[in-house]
Image (cartoon, rainbow, N blue to C red; front, side, top):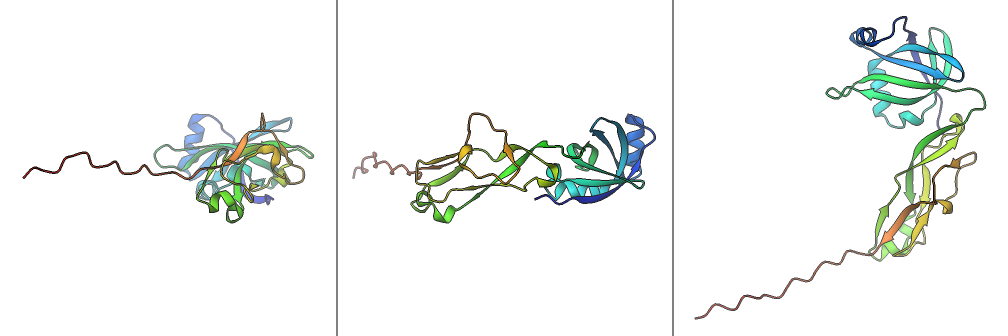
Length: 202
């Protein structure tokens, strides 16, 4: 489950493109906290720490407690923008979390049981159709991944979303019971064609 991470921020009095540029010149990343029926709050984060959190992975499924000048707010990142050239964060949107609220997030699919799949042991290839799944869950219960086991699958078998066991409190939002993984037959290399050229004449 996702642990709540603590981050420090400062309130921003000015908003707009000019103000945001000034914030970035100070080594900070402009951000906003919105939602839960409250007014948006413009904040600034340490740019280096923000970049580290983004590149560490799972940023958009991590619940944060943001300390804004002493006032703490629980929120989850909903979006972020990176500079197209230098790859540093230029803005982050946080969704404020109210008590008892559930949210929609995408989490990665983690395939296990490959060593127990007859299809893979016989030379079949694992084809992952869905690399992530959208779920609805309480923010403090967001799983790092959804586990999908291919144990027992033979060549030609497929595993659909309704066959997986979800963690407690997680609702799958996938439509039409999508295929998650399939075991495809081994690739057969074409036999080398017979030589067609005649032997050189004496």
